[in-house]
Image (cartoon, rainbow, N blue to C red; front, side, top):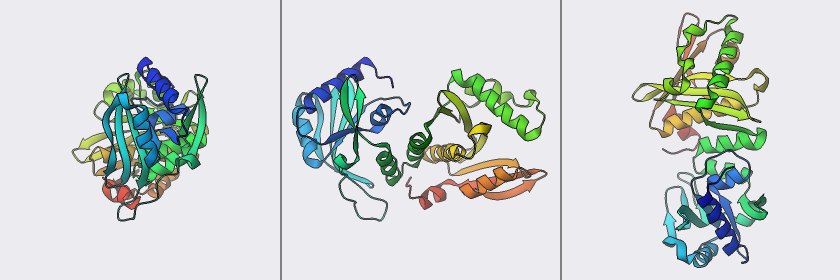
Amino acid sequence: MTLDAAQQAALRLIHARLQPHPLVWAITGSLGLALQGMPLDVHDIDLQTDAQGAYAIQRLLADFVVEPVREVVSERIRSHLGRLRIHGVAVEVMGGVQKRRPGQAWGPPTAVARHRRWVAWEGRRLPVLDLAYEEAAYAQLGRLGKAAAIRLWRTQRVSLRPFRPADQRAAQGLILAAMQERWGTLDPGKNPDLNDIASSYADGVFLVACQEGALVATGAFRPPAADTVEIVRMAVRRDRRRRGIGRAMLWTLCWRAYRAGYRRAILETTAHWHDAVAFYRAFGFRITHRAGEDVYFALDLPAFFAAHGAGP
C-alpha cells in the first residue's frame, strides 16, 4: 500500500485524536481494504462507527468539518454522515450504518466492534473492518463487482485491476499461450489487438488478475454497439484454473459494463471447447446461435444483476 504524504499526515492525525477516547470506530472503504493488503489506489479516508460515535468524532475533529454529521437516508443505506477535509484529504464519517435490499426492511445498525480487527501501520494499531464483513456489506449494497474482488483477494490473494502498460508483455504472452493450447498452432499476426493492448482497448475495459506479483488472468470488453459490450480475451493461466478466478473476472467485467449503462453482453467461443461452453452457460449466458464451429452467447445485464439483488 502506498499513501501520499497528505494521506499519511491525515491518518496520523485521526489516530492521534481518536485513539485516547473510548470510541468504537474502524477504517473502511479503499483504505481499510488496502491496510489489509489489497493493492488499491486510495483517494480518501472512510471511518465507520456507531451513531453516537459519529458526533463524538465530529467534536474531536471539529476544526476539519466540511459538512456536519446528520442523518442521511438513501435507497440502500441509512447513516449519520459527516464530511471532513484533513490536510486536503477527504474524510467521511458514517455512524449507525443500516443497509437494506430493495423491498426489504432496514437491517440493524452495523456492530462495528464485532467486525473490527487491528492492523499495524507505522508502529500504530489501526482498526479496520475485516474482509469477510466488507465482502458481505458490498454485496448487500448491490456493489457486486467490489464484493467479488474482495472475495478473490480474501480467499486466494488474487487481485483484479485495470491493465497497465507495464503488463503488455505478460498479458500478451498469457493470451497467446492459451490460444496455442486451445488450437495447437498459432499465428500471432492474426491478433493485432495484442500488440498494443492499451490502445486497442482504449474505448473499453481490459482487466488483469495478479497473484504473488505474477499476472495469472486477463479479460476485456469492447463496445460494438451503443448498448452492448463484447467480452473478449478471457484467459487464465493453466496452473490457476478451476479456482474461481475466471468467474470473478467475468463477473467484474459484466458488472463494470452494467454500471456504465450497457444492457447486453455478448461473447463467442468454439463449440468443441466444452469446458468453456459449460462455464458461460453456468454463469448465466444463453446461446443465441451457432455458426460453423463457433457458438455465440448473450447476457441481459439488467435482468442478470436484478436477479442477484443489484440495483442500477
